[in-house]
Image 1 (cartoon, helix red, strand yellow):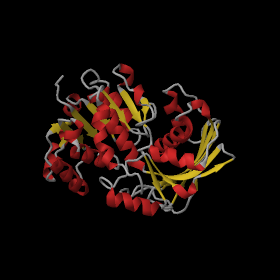
Image 2 (cartoon, rainbow, N blue to C red):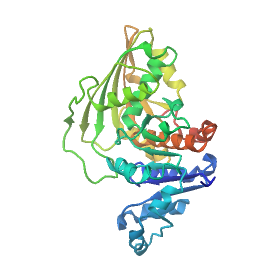
Image 3 (cartoon, rainbow, N blue to C red):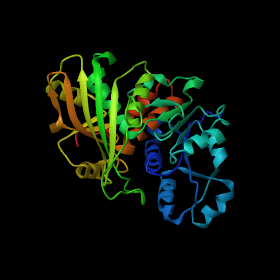
Image 4 (cartoon, rainbow, N blue to C red):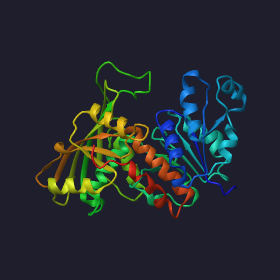
Length: 358
């Protein structure tokens, strides 16, 4: 296998497109020799973003029977899809729900001897080891058990970050007596033309122990560290396109205060604090100041919503930077495959993109 460090991204949607752009813009600092991406269908409406990514330095890969379709629309492929996978060091799958699993069976297992690691996104439950940046970095090792990684969903990032920062850090997992969450989800992304709803819609509790999948996913994420946490979540969807909102209630064994909670949040570089109380204003800040309009922090906590009751119960609201936090974890996991002993130094170049305050 070549010693060149090549990262290949499959999919150019709400996660794939900004991920490719970020990899290109920080290519040298991240120690990456080449970034390539796969596009499945040649669409005139997608040409502008494909040409923009090519201009940034990424290389386009398409299926061999679709080369002429792309060329006819002015997009010049450089690689064939299967070859692009086989020559890569790390592959990040950002395709719609279910496609990652299909790609794993059709392609990824076939090239597992030449590619160091494969990552898929939050929708691909069971794809591999669950991972989120700064939560369980230690579980990605240089062995076959870590070759397939599932980057957990954006809301799972948020739940895990809040839980670890406020209840587990300093005292260990036994300090968390219970964690309760309500995920108020936006209907669809601003880039999506389908999936919007006319009014709020409540979800169901599909799991007897955890409620919605969010707490279940967070529990399984912490389980990779040997933690068994008492978590439960509910979810609903509202008629907005901006950001998810998370309500949290943590009960801890050790006493705390509101000032201590604020101090812990401010000490975590992946947490942003805001006094803004509307998703639109936080979203607008990310659009104006974030890379590709994204907020890469794992959560944005509303300062005035923080409340501590009886010295042991922590309540509050926070916003989920949807695709931003999973982009950070995708890059972190890829860098750990590229540079297993120095990846922390490499990904530190992205620290300048975090916001202490929004």
